[in-house]
Length: 396
Image 1 (tube, helix red, strand yellow):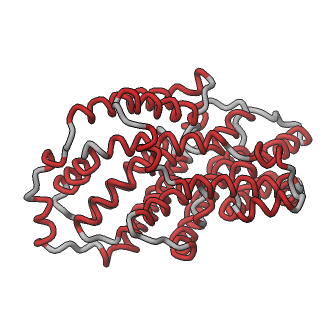
Image 2 (cartoon, one colour):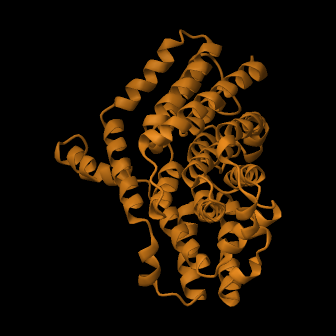
Image 3 (cartoon, helix red, strand yellow):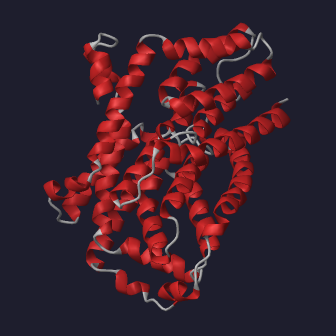
């Protein structure tokens, strides 16, 4: 927030442009889903899910880790990575606390999995929505061109995650008995509230699946769903809004303004143009530069404004070379893969990363910038390298 104030006071961006730079869709999505999840949490549903999963896996850490990461990637592809983290992070914390597993490591890996899974579809990550809209790409275009790449990345990511954590995944029999001898149904505290809140969640998810048909942003659906949840479940707004991670909300607002100042002063534009000039007109080289440049820059900047700037530059380049500025093209897939996967590089690379760290900190698990980078950085390089091989083998 100090940085956001400084760029406005220093004249690097005017107040109206600073406000316009704030992505209210993300802000509304966070506030709405945080509140809805808090209502569901009062029912004991998350505890029931955590204990049930752990019991089905007989308290064994490795199957639990793999199951959580697969579910995270699947949910992120169908919904979006922010909503997925809001739903699954509390469950992950409960399971790891119960079995005395390294909670912070699980949360970091879950954030990475959410960004990988979100890359697979049109609605999984905001950069994909931008690319799809500007290039006139359909939902199935993303499934056909990006989902195979994500499956290949996931096939390497899962065993790599296990290798890094394998020495911390031993759970003694005495601790495993906590879940193998448990009765998960006893965790449910309010059956009526659970049924009502889940019914509203069903309406919200239906809205997420169909929002592109009605041209309604997911943030508005989440905000409307929050109001419906409070009404149907008889909850006071002033009580439920206290559970919102307001420090995370203000962090995002400040970050959007600072990134908006960089964009307003041509910094992102300069970086994007430099990437394209380096290629010298070679399509393969241009594709690889867009991929790696997008990945590296998205790790330290927000990927949404970067994609907004890159799209018209790529389209102009395609027109200059006689190609169509819309439709399926390797450059569009390189941009989407780089921007989405690059978000795994640092905490500020993706909204899901910031959120998982805030949720962890609220529960007593501090994840520093360096802690996240030690795990996220190598996985970002690994996934981008696999994406590079995929683009080369499939399109060249």
